[in-house]
Image (cartoon, rainbow, N blue to C red):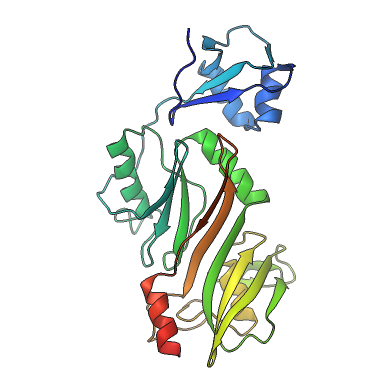
Length: 297
């Protein structure tokens, strides 16, 4: 049997060590999760050099281990929607999320979300997989959103987001930040009996690096790099330091200059799950934030 051609469902992995257990290769070298490994074994979805794994226990240098990921049914309603795609390969779909749209369906908003539009795109392209969000953005935050086309890509990218991925935001905030750059290291926890997150000694470690890009009268354009990934981390940190994001009605106040918080995820640097290729993405500010800057001058 020949080695199958790669697709969003077929992943070929080259063994680089002389001799290694199949289980160790997949769990230690490729770093797939125990859950996914057990699922692949149960479904007979692992092949060696085009042949079903069967009773084979070891693989050798030069062998090709193939993961044949089964088709999946989605529970999301597909809705035709224009997507601003900034990167795509066999494993990932990365889009520039516009502001003022939910990423994921909720009880009160089951339709009209980005996931509904992504499901339509998956159906159109014959991608018979669930829509798996690697990261999420608030309804009113714009910018880079990463979607995995299969469970292998999802767990590989999720690991990067937890450990070493580089992502940056741009925000326009109230008041002039005096320091040109610094690190905000303040723990964040849940507000008691409330919906907001707050800086609290009982919270989890939360670290945000920032660099001032420009100061415009009584406002600051600032670049922010998330070191930890707490909910609303940037918004909480900036508000606590008396630099709330313009238009942030939850952690600051509404603004007549923009109808949402002026926060944009503009930069992402990562390694592709399959080919270990370094990819660097950078997208421009959306028009409403450009207009906000002009109006602040």
